[in-house]
View 1 (cartoon, helix red, strand yellow):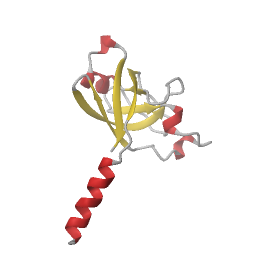
View 2 (cartoon, rainbow, N blue to C red):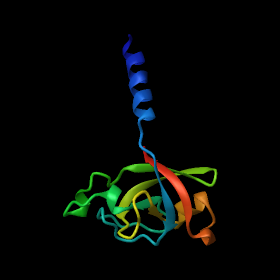
View 3 (tube, rainbow, N blue to C red):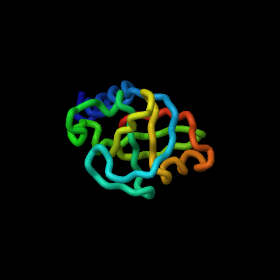
Length: 119
């Protein structure tokens, strides 16, 4: 098997084993997030539930900080970077910046069920 074939098989296997999460998506006004970065409503960012974010004593050290997720809902797809923790979010639910919410649904919807996975 060639190196390219092995690589393509590895990519296909890892893609097929990606864990998909399901939950509600809401939006919030970002500021200084748990990852230690300041963000605005126009930044493509997301806050994860404690179950997915983790509970490191120093939230800046969470292994999910800076990772990107792909969000699917309402027949649309978008991507956001993990920068914060949403203490009130249930497992699988996410809180996103308004610009990301608007990619999936109008802001006046307020809450919508989505699926998402880490990239």
